[in-house]
Image (cartoon, rainbow, N blue to C red; front, side, top):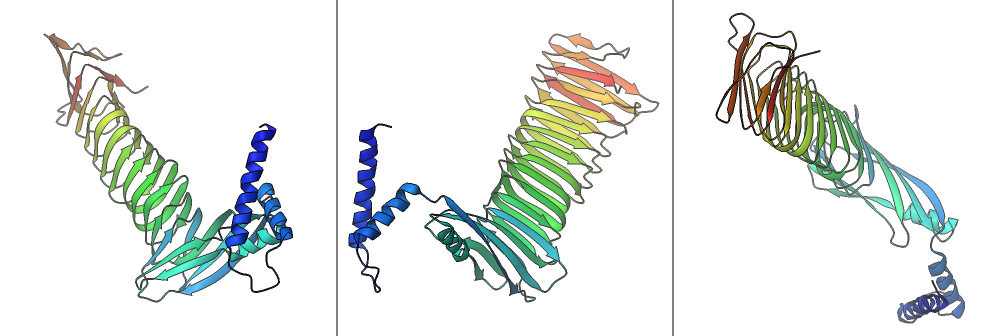
Length: 365
């Protein structure tokens, strides 16, 4: 930056400070208009806010029986803990910058936790002074019966509450031991759910992991990487350009969408995957009905045992291979078909369909 640009910037600063001082309300104390005051303001503008200070606010609110939900709005770092208690307790740690240590501490102290009591719901949000920049961490302890709703924010941990709803939450989210449902939407970060009654979520750009979901798990995802371990209920997924791995599902699995990759390991109930331009792999240890449909990408069925199952595989403008197995597909015009039964009196069917892609049937290593 040259001298000319520097003088222009300083000129704007001087004009701005003068305009503020001349148009500000009249002072009621000795602190009236003075060039010394203008000079100090100019120094603050040029120096910025190099100092930092931290202050912790604590308090509690009543939680009558009519209060069933606690809501949080735009809290940057939030931790919600359910406990056997009859009130809502909080600890708000605020770090603020400022032109010096005294002002930084003042700004941190002026940050407050605002409440809005709506009868059945209590909304909490943090309000900051405008003179500087603050970061905060809010820890709230609520009764175990409480439902929680989080709007906005970037980092969240929640445990031992009745249910939780996410509305546009980004970045890292860790949720554990939820008695009821986890619902809402998440985008652009890590999402870890360990222990929930049910899950109904919309995911965008997430890296998600689900464990110990006791009932239905329903996901609508885009550009997401997702791992689901040992779900107990029905799994239903609609995906676009996502990579999904489901391990040991106890209930039926249904996946639809396009692009990406779908892997299901050791299912214990019916599997239906109907996607376009997506890679598909299912590993079978038990005899369960399987329907796999895709296009343009490889479709693999891996048999561990093998289980007693009847294979019906068809691809158009593609190929079928069975490495290590003495199986020969039949080709007519542009269609290739392979049928084979593993085990005696196999009655459970695996229907495999591909268009412009390969079907691979092999034994587990």
